[in-house]
Length: 308
Image (cartoon, rainbow, N blue to C red; front, top):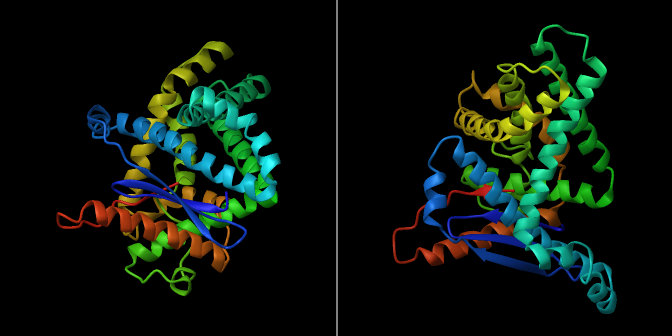
């Protein structure tokens, strides 16, 4: 909220602009866990690990930005009272990272089970071939997803969130193109990017249609159970597809494989104003500064940039 997060090799950095125009930073050093790093090298499993890790870390940064945003909207007394309940109180009990992971899992369950149940109830006797049912289920997922994103984008807070999302993509694109990170240079780039999480969401729908087509079911409960059990596989495969399409983005004939995700980004990103681009640049440059400082004793490598 009113900011941007970037992840480098050694740190996650969020930059948030306050009403007084000052930019405040929130920095969380990366902690490498040996067995987690091992899992990240295993196809299919690395997708699950990456998503869970991103959800946990993202929740920390979201909580920071939300608290800053609340402080800006309320006076000191009201802000203190607000933090006693709601998400802030829940985060104290379970931990912000756990809340983030649980939120992700809940969202995936909703967008996985509700379309399957709706298709079974409405179109249960329309097709004899279950592939037809899976295709309709996928179409329902897409409609629900696009409709959800479209309608929440009309709220002022979410619209600004999507503008910052666009600013984030512009900065990454400018950096990857070797351009100096000035507002003028960054604004010349597109708000769409192949590695965006929006692309991953689309791929989970498309991959799910294919995976579910290999199994048969006799009733709605068996169908829903299959969706739950296959969810880790669908997530893992979707992550691999995202990596694959990103590796082909410079191949003219094959770059179209990433287009479904880019089309969804037309909803999840908006053109940012210059002040939002400034925040994104500040976050990115702070991340680079910390990374370079941590690796000052060795030859510096270009960071493997990730974005929310």
